[in-house]
Amino acid sequence: MPLILDLEIAEALAAAAAAGELPVTPRGDALALRDVTNATLAYIDGLEPDSPDVLFEDHQIPMADGSTVLGRWYTKAGSTPGSAVVYLHGGGMVCGSVQLYDRLVAKYVQETGVPFLSVDYRIAPEFPGTTLADDSYSALVWFIERAEQFGVDRARVAIMGDSGGGGVAAGVAIAARDAGTALAKQILIYPMLDDRNLNPDVEIAPFASWTYDNNYTGWNALLGDNVGGKEVSPLAAPARLVDYSGLAPAFIDVGELDIFRDENVVYALNLARAGVSCELYVRPGCLHAFDRLAPQARVSAASWADRFRAISTL
Image 1 (cartoon, rainbow, N blue to C red):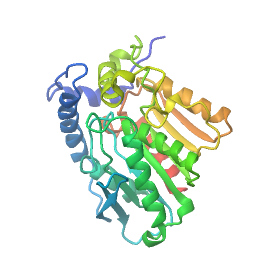
Image 2: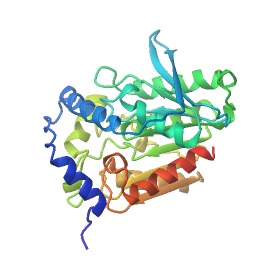
Image 3: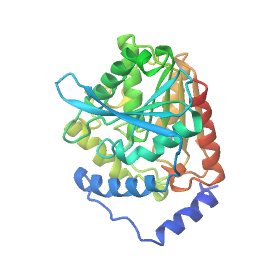
């Protein structure tokens, strides 16, 4: 029986399509993809509900090369759980920002009471290779070193990201393991993990909101001629990892119509085989970013509830 789109998600997509289709960007043109995707992210984030109890403050986090990146610290008034999440925005390695994820991150904090540090890591093609993970790991270490100042137990800090940011978060978890930096959990929302995932799956391709051409564009901007080759660091493409032992416990959430489905399932299996606890969800009838395209759908509501629980129980 063929795969089909969840009915409530299909209805939401049909309503959105009435406003006009998104332009198709040329394969390999990362800057064109950035323009279109950032406009879409701005629109979607603007639909997120207000989070009246959430406050934020901005910090400039130093990087090893002398530059700084923005870290936006979100807290909920009256909530002091002692845990925290370092969040990495999505954007296929080439787009997205803290600002474009402002209302989404605030929603996580509003719903769970757990504070978040959202990190504006530098993106490809201007900053290729492992720069994204390196920036984000530096931000994680910066935060952990100051955890007490933020009212946080350094043993209760998680890394989290979605899509491209989920891939970066997985890379940060690898870097943390290798450096001996304690990490409570890695929360990966339909993460982009494998630069070799470039050949369309005929069953999934018709539903791809993040297309195989988009995927090539993102990975090519990050890795250049190394895409699909032998010399790719797992910090950049975590699916290249050989030894999964000792990584932080994982939560992975993906739709069955997402082009990242198989790489996410394989990643979860590799974690489990290495003795790493992994909570995996493959949502029936869901495509990439289903939760934001149709947030009121019942399958999306179940996904939000599972994430809120994973965050709240840190």
